[in-house]
Amino acid sequence: MNVNIKISKKVFNDVYLPYLDNDDRYLIFYGGGSSGKSYFIGQRWIYKIMHPTRCNLLVIRQTGDTNRRSTFPLFKQVIRNWNLSQYFKINESDMRIVCKLTGNEIAFAGLDDVEKIKSITFANGELTHEWVEEATECKEEDINQLKVRLRGGKSKKQMVLSFNPINIQHWIKRHFIDSGLATVCFSTYKDNKFLTDDDRKALEDLKYIDEYTYNVYCLGHWGILGKTVFDARAIQNRLEAIQKPLKVGYFTYDYDGLKISNIKWVPDRNGYIRIYQLPNTPAVTKYCIGGDTAGEGSDCFTAHVLDARTGVQVAALKHQFDADQYTKQMYCLGMYYKNALIGIEANFDSFPIMELQRLGYMNQYVRESQDTYTGKTEKRFGFKTTSLTRPTIISRLIEIVREHCDTINDKDTLEELLTIIRNEKGRIEAPEGGHDDQMMGLAIAHHIREQVVFDTEAMQMPSQFRFNVEKMAQTQYDYGEEIVVV
Image (cartoon, rainbow, N blue to C red; front, side, top):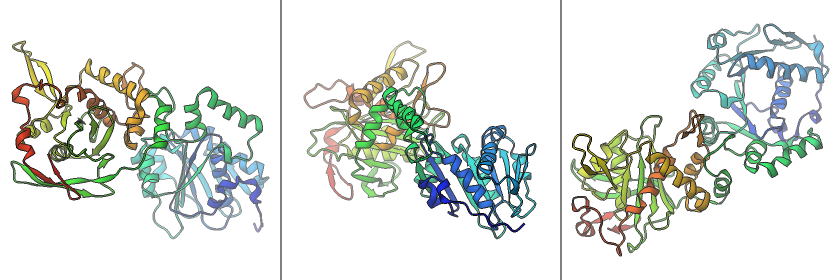
C-alpha cells in the first residue's frame, strides 16, 4: 500500500515537538498531572510506526491488565482522532496493533508476567522500542531486564519512560535523571494547550486548598502524595533556599592497626561527606554528631554534625560502608569538628561504638541502661532505639522541621524527610522502597545535644567516659586545606 500521509505539527503540544524524532537510547517524560505527556507519547508512537523505519514497540506497565484500560485505548483514540483506522489492524483480544503501511507493530505486556514478555515476537523484525508507562510503579531490576531485551539487530533502539514524580527518593530519579543517563522532557499542565479553561482553573484552585499537593501533582515537584509526617511546605521552601556545600569529599588517614594519625581532607565532588560550615576557630563552638548504622531496612551509614547550641546542621555523611570504614570516617569527622560528641545508634551494629572506644575516641554519648540480671543501672556508650525513644526523638525532629527548618542545610536529608509517612498502624517510617537513615541520624543528633558539655558548665559525665582533652590539644591533624589544632 503506497500512501503518503502528512501529520500537521499543530496536533502536538509545542513543548514535546523537540522530542518527536528523538532517537536517544533513553528518553524520559515526567512532570505534573494533566500535562498531556501520555497522550503525546501515544501520538509519537503512531507517528513513528507509520514511517518505513523499523519500529516494533512493546508497551509495558507493572500489571498487564492496566494496559487494557489505559495505553491500548489511548492508541485507538489517536488512530481514530487522526482518521487513520483504515491503515491499522487492531486485534482486541491479543492487544496487538499493526500498521498496514509498514508492518510495524505495537504489543502490550505487564511486568507481572515476565515469561510473556520474554516470548513476545514480531512478524517483521526484532523489538526496537519500549515504552514503560507509570514507570515509578516498576522495580529497578525489572527495568534492567527490559534494557537487556533491547539488543541485537541493526535497528536503532530506544526505551521511553513516563511518570509523575511523586517519590523524591525513587530509584528512577537516581538511575536515569540524576545520573544524566537519559534525555529528559519535563512538563506540567501549563504546557498543555488543549486543556480547557475550566480544567486549568480546577487545577490552579488546588493550590488554595492544599498547596503541597498542588506543587507535587500539578507542578511536578518531587515529593510524595499522601499524609507526610514532616511539614512539607517548610521543607519545600527550604529546598528552594539552600546553598551548595562548602566542601564535598572524605578523609584519608594513616592507620597502624591501633591508632589513626595524619588525617587529611580530600576534596572530591563525588565524596560522601558534605560540609556546610567549617569548624569554628578558636574552639568556641561545640559540636555533636548523630549516627545511624546500616541495619534492618537500611543500606547506608549516615551522620549529621550539628552546632550543639543552635542545632544548625554543619555537615552530613551518607555512604554504603563496611562498619570499620564508617567508624574511621566518624573518628576523623569528630576530630575535625573539635572532638565533637558522637552518638551512634547501638541497635543493629555496636561495632562502631566499641571501635571508636578502642581507637581512643571517648567523647561518645552515654545512655543509662538497666542490667537485666542484676537490675542495676549502668552507663553505656551509644543511642538505643526503643519503642519509647524512637517516637520521642522523631517528635522532636518534627517540631524542629516545622519551626526551624532553616537549620537543615543538606538537600539529601530534606528530600528524605519529605517522603516519611505514617503507615496504616500509625508508625512513622519510610515508604516501601525508601529509607529513613537520614531521618534517624538527624533525630539522634538533636537528641544528644543536651549532653554536650560547654566550658561554662560543670562536667557531668563519669570520669571513665571523659575524653582526655589536654592530650588531644597537643596533637595536630592535617586536613589538607588547613591544619586544625584540637
